[in-house]
Amino acid sequence: MSQTTLPPETSDKNVLTYSALNTFRNCPRKYKHRYIDNLRPRMKVESLSFGSVIHSAIEIWYRSANDANRLWKALDFIDRSFPERATDENQMANWHLARAMFSGYASRYPTEDFTIIEVEKTFTGQIRNPDTGRCSQTFVMAGKADAIVQRSDGMYLLEHKTAASIDGNYLDKLWTDTQIALYSYYLRELGYPIVGIIYNVLLKSRLKQSPGETEQEYEARHAELAAKNKSGKSTAKRQMPETNEEFQGRLAAWYSKPESFHREFIYLSEERLAMLQDEVWEITQQYLDARRRGKWLLNTSSCFSYQRPCEYLSYCQSGFNPNVAENLYEITPPHEELTSIDSDSPVF
Image 1 (tube, one colour):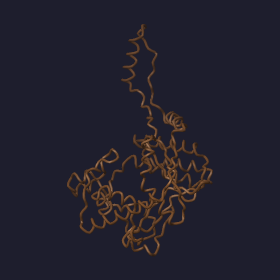
Image 2: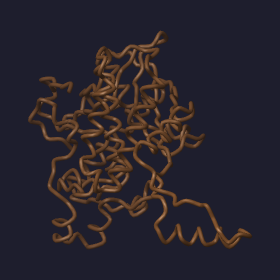
Image 3: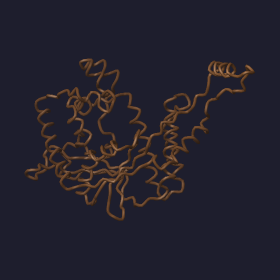
Image 4: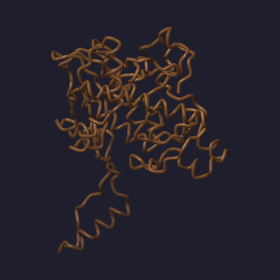
C-alpha cells in the first residue's frame, strides 16, 4: 500500500478527512460517537462490506497490470473474503455476486485507454482560510484516491463504485460527489494536473440462486398438473436446487451485457473547487466552535439517510446507555484507511 508522510510544517496538526467533515456536517452527534468516542458498530453494513471486497479486488487487478495471473489473484482474494460461505447464505450469495461481477469486469476491460499513474494514492494538504489564504493552525486534510490515470486528453481520478441501478438519477448524483472533487483539488496541489473524474461503476445483479423445490412443493405441483391432465397423470420432475456452477453460468451471461458496467466522465470547474475550499473552511470553524462549547447537536433528519437507519440510532434511542455502547460497538480509532500515514498526529 502507498504511504504518505506528513510534511514537517503539518506534523503537529490534527489530520482531518472528508468522511469526518461530512459526518459532522450531517450530524454533529454522530461525529462525536465515531470520531471522538471512537465507537464503531460491531456489525458492518452488508452493502459496504461487499463494496470493500470489490474495491480491493480492483486494486489488485490494477496493481498487477503486468502479471499474467492477475485475474487469479483477484478471484483468490474474493474467495478468501467469504470464508464462511459454505454455511452462511449471505456470504454465499455475496461470493457468487463478487466472483461473477469481477470476472465480468475483467472480460469487459482486458485493456484500457488509460495508463495507471497511482493506485490507492494517499495525500495530505493544507486547509486554508479563503479570505486570507493562511493555513489552518489546527487541521490538515488527508485522504486516499482509488487511482490516478493518464488518458490522451489529460489526467483523471478513477473512482470505483458498485450500484444497485445505473439510471439518470444515479448519474446526476455523481456530480454532487464532493469528496472526489475535493481530492482532485489536493492532488493538483501535489503536482497531479487532474482535469476530471472517471466513475467506474459496476452494477449489482439481482439474480438469485434457485433453491429448487421441497418434496412438498413438488408433490403439490405434480398433483395440480395431474388434475389438469385427462389421464390424471403428470411427467413433471422435481426442480432441483441450482448448483454453484449453474448459477455462476447464469451470472456470467448477465455480466456479459454491456449495461452491466458504466464509466461516467465528470469534468471539474475552477469555480466548484474554490467553492469546496470555502465549505471546508466553514465546517472546520463550526467544528472548533462545537468542540470549544462541548455541544454536539443531534440531527434527526439524518437518522434514516440512504434508506437505512443510522448505525448509531440504537445508541441515541437508548439515551446513550453505556450497556448499549458496550454490546453494539467496539472502540476502534477512526479511518483505518489512513493508518499507513507515517505520523503520530491524531485523526479527526
